[in-house]
Amino acid sequence: MAEQMAGLADDRALLGRTSTAERVSDILRSRIADGYFPPGTRLSEDSIGGALGVSRNTLREAFRLLTHERLLVHELNRGVFVRVLSVEDVEDIYRTRRLVECAVVRGLGEPPYALEQLAAAVTEGQLASVEDDWKGVGTANIHFHRELVALAGSARTDELMRSVFAELRLAFHLVDDPKALHEPYLQRNRLILQALQANNPAEAEKLLAVYLDDSLERVVDAYRNRVGEDGTATD
Image 1 (cartoon, rainbow, N blue to C red):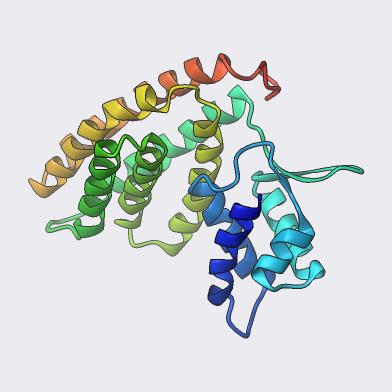
Image 2 (cartoon, rainbow, N blue to C red):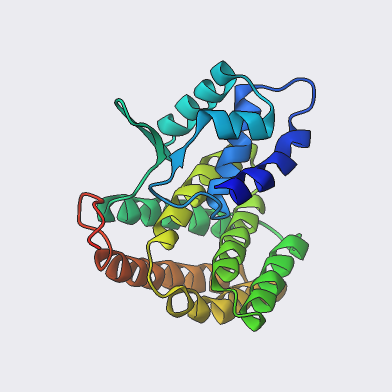
């Protein structure tokens, strides 16, 4: 936890002089999405507030916002914890992803498309795999899909999916073999990118739909080995 707080303190500069609960929640949401706080982690008001230099009231409001987004849960007399998802939660996350991500690709309009950040996410995943950093590959995969959604140019869609991708990271954390989960999608991300680079969004959407269906099946199968239907860990 000390190492986590030291890293979180680096985000203090992001708050500036006009610190708000929304900015604190943005930081914590991003940290959850990047795997910084695993599911079941108890979030210490003193440690996080000290690392970010914010008041207890500000932090509690940020916790409340993230609880509303289903990223945190408040347990009476115990504190605030990063949520452990159920299988039903995972299925709903993928249902939302399929609806939104496929619609974004379908509605791209006329090329050329701004694909630089999407290509950077593909490269990020490949570099992480070379280093055998499969948590990093998972993070790069989330970055890829975040940049795919960003192609819509919609701040509202970006905001919606930011929480969805943070929840997705919570599911990734409970998979025993991250390499087996993430490795197949390195090439599939590249194929989607190549279809868009070839100005063929219809092919990209087809690849994406199959991708998401396959990913859901893999995550749910792996997830059921670790948690029960109600999100209770089995080991």
